[in-house]
Amino acid sequence: MGAAGSKLEKALGDQFPEGERYFGFENFGNTCYCNSVLQALYFCVPFREQLLEYYTSNKSVADAEENLMTCLADLFSQISSQKKKTGVIAPKRFVQRLKKQNELFRSYMHQDAHEFLNYLLNEVVDILEKEAKATKPEHETSSSSSPEKIANGLKVPQAANGVVHKEPIVTWVHNIFQGILTNETRCLRCETVTARDETFLDLSLDIEQNSSITSCLKNFSSTETLHAEDKFFCDKCCSLQEAQKRMKIKKPPHILVIHLKRFKYIEQLGRYKKLSYRVVFPLELKLSNTVEPYADVEYSLFAVVVHVGSGPNHGHYVSLVKSHNHWLFFDDENVEMIEESAVQTFFGSSQEYSSNTDHGYILFYESLGPTK
Image (cartoon, rainbow, N blue to C red; front, top):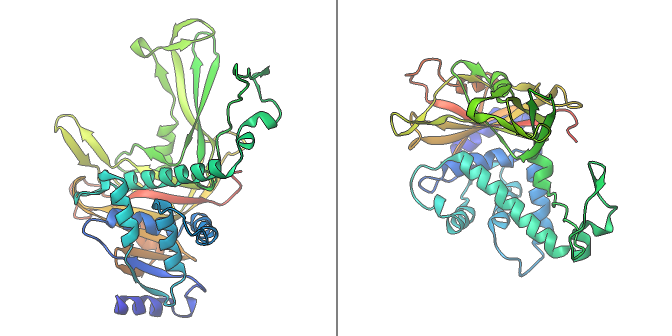
């Protein structure tokens, strides 16, 4: 990698960003799914900054128990504090911890990068929530000290023992990745709209051949009619009624993670198949399926996890990352510069059987405007 590293340094020359480090990760047999996601997260600046801050404030705690998050913070700290600008790091401690903790990642089978990302973010949230509960006195975590909550104009009844429902803990992972979806259902008899909110850390989108992220998001929010055996129970009519349902983004996240559903279960085959469909993902994305006041929030693409291969049970993962206006290609130990125009070669194939099997799988977008 010495030669490749110096090649990257030569390519960037005096444009090499001050204080930045570009390190490849060693592959331990089948850990490309992990390497590609970790590179995307390292170049997700708000995530990296929070994790390094966590590392600094926790390294003085002598009896701090090792967990997946401390191993990740340690790895990120190792990269950022390297004397060399480029090179290779072995994320051994992190991978060992991951395999110890979750048997799903223990085998030498091909793993799913999206499953890993989901597991990792939820694990970090769990650790942060446990730590927040441990450091806060009981009276602070319950909302009894705050003004009584009003729901639909009524005071929330207290439980018989006087305990008020605790407010959910909002961690920095939520502040970075969490958005809110609202599921609106309109009864076609009385026109009453029922809305139900749910949070998300990423959006999984169904894909179609020769489409775009914008059209996939439109389909995600398209209106569906509930009728026949799918009728909706309307509380106002007190009976099952035909209704229209749609999903919209009520609060867009600061970092929008989009997972393209490239692996589809085919009933007739009795197995999963990879969809190599061409799905255009723009460098700048405008979200239109949002609720006011977030109409037309704009996002900029900064990382793509790419699945290489024709099937779901084998293949390879690499990642593309935008850092200080340069695009970089990370393939385990190897890191090289690529042109911005090369990003479009990862959209997918417009014909079913194509020699190009490098397809965008997880997209990371950063908001350019306020999402608070």
